[in-house]
Image (tube, rainbow, N blue to C red; front, side, top):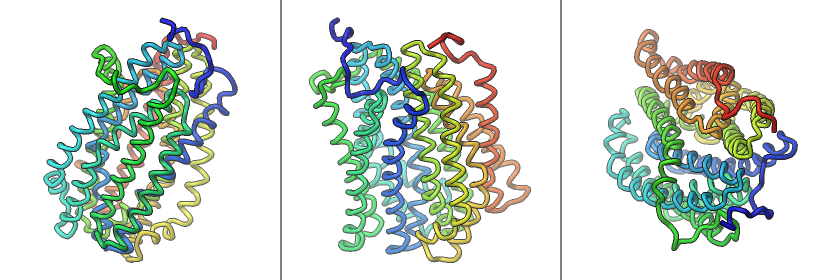
Length: 456
């Protein structure tokens, strides 16, 4: 096929040549800015409800996040598998299969988005009850979740489309679309809550409207490009062989995200026992934490794309060097932000609520968790690299074994010896340490590259 022989420059970026740390940084920065904008509009949701609705509404948004991550985790994992496949085809310049993969991915996201709407709307109330959500928060949480899940199609289509662009090295356009989405969300938050007085429902409607904007923009970008990853609606179908390849890599990542999210739901249920102030304090901290964790997740995405393209080009030495350089860059950022959050944590929590009980719980979480952020720096880079190498089963087993199984053992068997809010929150640092340890052991002992020692 002539399409397979194309060698001309595309709008994607090949990461198989050049200075590794500069390429990872250049790819990560637009992702970082985009994710910070996304975190900003999620944070504005909480600021608006915490200051202009009630502490109970803030608690409702906070307790909803872990459930949202649980239900959409599988589909986000599949988008990871899609990105790995696409980055490898792009690195190998196999444009015919790249074309099949793009159309299969978007078709899968449409089917998944419709299924997510039905699943989320139906299950949200009962799961919130299982999570021991207090009565004064339950109604708001149910309203928020049901409206949020009505926009699931937009959410999943955007993430899949943005994943395709990132897989070919284009991290700038997803940034532009997230900025547009963030501005839309912030404006609508203020209009729906302060002008129309729709309260927590207004925040949820603003969220799905903004997700619709980003989904439309990313689909238009894929349709209008003249490059090999162009989306043609007339060719939108699921290729079974390609779907099997995508799911073989994506399902372990999806299971990992969903099961870890399930453990977080159980942790949230144990936090809920301490009342709406504890829920609001923990939820406010979670929003602040995003400004630390999201940049680490962007370097994880960069490591996945970098690894996938270099494995496609059979440049394995570059993959190994990328791990070290990625960890060093991420660690510098993590140290700086961790110190700032540790010193000014009370002020950060105060943005969300002036309630002294909420401030106290939020500051307690910061003092427990912030000193251990470096463990997640190492984990995110290694996980991204292993995913790019197609080793999603290994990352699933490490992640689920530590962040779910071990976390549940801790919650159910160790916390009862010292039942307290502090003891529940400690499950995060404990399992982060064990996860990082197993990541390092796997990288050292396992033969995870297709051909160790090959020269790039």
